[in-house]
Image 1 (cartoon, rainbow, N blue to C red):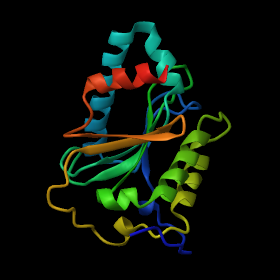
Image 2 (spheres, rainbow, N blue to C red):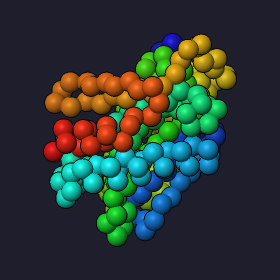
Image 3 (tube, rainbow, N blue to C red):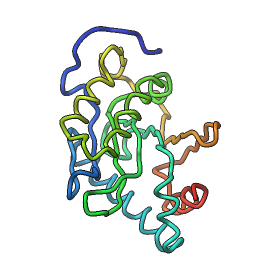
Amino acid sequence: MSETPVTETPATENLAGWYGKLPHLGDFASRRLPGSFIAGWDEWLRHGLASAREALGPRWLDGYLVAPIVRFWVAPGLLGASSWAGLLMPSVDRVGRHFPLTVAQPGPTLAQAQAAPGWFDALDAAARRVLDLDFTVDDFERALAEAVQGRALPWLESAPAQPEGETGSVWWFSQDGAELRGRFEKLPPAAAFTRFLEACR
């Protein structure tokens, strides 16, 4: 099912959640993401980033700073009971500590996520704006509300039944005009961070 224009004002619970670092804040921050997601996601990110730093030394930052925004879908069972769709963007906090910003929403099937490019584009645009130091958390929240304004997202209308056998995680991003995709049995292994950042330098 593709996106269909609607006019309702989005409820707060329909907004994507987020977690990570923002340039105008001094530490981690989050909204609307449960502990079951953040705990597993944070451990996976830290392990992957540490692996890349160890493998690449000071060169890891060259890749991190220019890495594209990556979109993802994660099957139920990997980060709690729900599936997840969203994006991962390189970011940094106010004192220069680098850690990605994640924007994610529970519920979609893989097919539903792949049929919502406009929603991903709107999340992408909202996430990029946080790199402006004048763009506050409240501004970010308003931008995320605009991301669902005028869109009928089927996973928000009813609890979707995940197709049997829908497992693993799918990742995609655009680079040099081409869309690149990868699928993993679970979350990507730590070595994937190193390969990704090496390719971005």
